Length: 590
Image 1: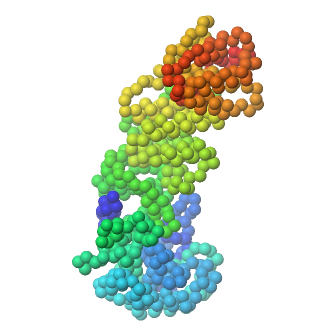
Image 2: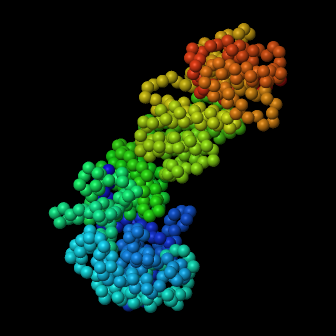
Image 3: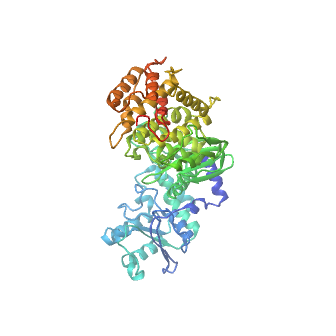
């Protein structure tokens, strides 16, 4: 997967003449200075990322130059510094990075500055002498590009020593109390910055140089991206090979992979955690969590997270023929034909949808109270929802939903979302008292089942409408009429349970009283639960109430064929549908 992604990235880099990373680069917050060749400060700007929009002002003076200088001068990680004390965070003599509070607190001293430049003057002796593998890489680079210009290093060291501790005299507005960076760059040619950056990157680019091998005078090593070969991760070692490393890259390919991960880091820093790499069209598209490209012919999907020091690939998948536009379109129909009294806005949800993202948001709103969309790009351990049932349903369904919305994969929609999660959420909502919401959920569930079903099934609107009419006729008949089948029976159980619970005089009626009926595992438990409710509330039922008498007789007089497994979904359906015992605008028992 990674190899194919790198091929696309390399093509894009060549097409943009190496500017792909810089176009998306986001420098760290701080004050940026450019010192001219004459030693005068040519530019001083503050760069601050907006915490809400995650954007920065790219129109500031010299922004592109600063991005180029900064990108080539930063450390791979704090574990690989050029300053042994880790106070100075730059990697070459053309730049000098330090936290402002390090100057104010006295952490930065002249001794530390001298140690930093001493390392830059003689990297082989002062930095890489303990690592034979790193020394070989540096020597190969120095043989090709030349040694460090000692005069340049000494000149930059002298300027820093003369100015770093009295910059307020040069820049009165400089606030050293801030926790951000002070970054100083010395004017130089682009090729000079790239050369000195590589002088640092190449010997440090591998995760662990002890795994380096030399093949035909070319050094190969383990790249340092989302991979760590150490004693804490022995499972990454391939013990059956002479070299236990999982895979090796030469310096050129390792640099390309580093740049690729730098680019991904830029994207996730900009809030674009969903990345699509189209290997057919040679395109890379980064999207914020509620967006997706119109189409991807074939390639890969990456879900990114921002780690402490680098981008993390949290999930990846192959993509074949992804189309954001639905064909055929999805139809959200009013299956139960309900009239929403408390929430008339529910009616506006019905209609035709031809966009995956829109349908995903609809499912999120109706079933998951808009919590699911916020969890797509979160680590499992970071998902914290006060409602335990809702949290469980979000965790169980987010991978399936993300696969359909962002990758066009509907394999898990029917068995996971429609068979398990939707009913769990409907059951939870009704016990929380949101009966009208459950009616909307039933409509969406049946509409989704119709859309995702591999076989053309029954028209649920007709099936439910016919069952409701049949039950209504039987309840309103003068003589007791038997139930025809199990489906009708369980629907009547829900109707009877609602009626009995509605008789309660409690000021705060709680639908959780339905739990014994809804959680019943067999028919015996159902009938026992209904009888307890009848004994509790029968004082409110007047003698000669024909509708109730018929409904009670229909339920108690029928034994389902599969009495050992209750149809909880149909019970819930009967509970939320318009109750047949009540007349319109008037209760039978009043």
